[in-house]
Amino acid sequence: MAFERFVETGRVAVVSDGPNKGKLVSIVDVIDQTRVLVDGPETNVPRGQIRLNQLHLTKFRIKYPFTASSKVVRKAWKDGKVLENFENSVWANKIAAKKQRALLTDFDRFKLRRARTRRNKIRTATFLVLRKTASRNGTLYGKKKMAKGGDKPKPSKKPKVEKKKPAKK
Image (cartoon, rainbow, N blue to C red):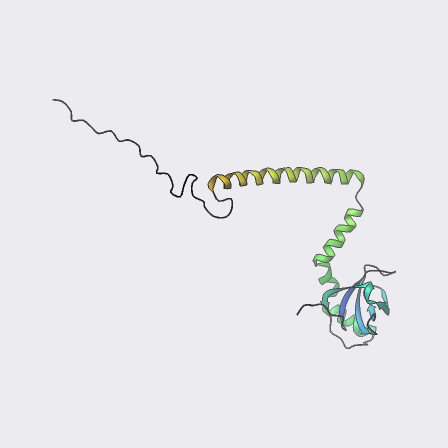
């Protein structure tokens, strides 16, 4: 299937606009093609309608019948451990990092820029060393290449072995 996240009863979503921006809600019922009834009992979002373009659907879904009461939604929310699962997701980590970046001072941004510069210099130096050794080995492009100068490799020079002369008597 092309899509994995559908607008359906029990789908957990993040509000992207309005007074409840950034809060988690659960879709209780679909009103029409553009609006849904949502409820966020554990995130202090009152039950009400919201436009679909104000929601970002998550991969989480909880099971309850459509048009269920807030009490049923709250119980399913707790049983499904929605908040714990979302806090452990990559999405929540990105949101936390964004908030942390917004709190940086000028000096913190300066220190971060200097640290990134140092890291990139170390990374580039290591890469160049690895590329140089791979080029010398002939494995730069994934497979061992023959020595330059024709199809046949040059024969290695054998050391000359001196013959022992018979001792004079």
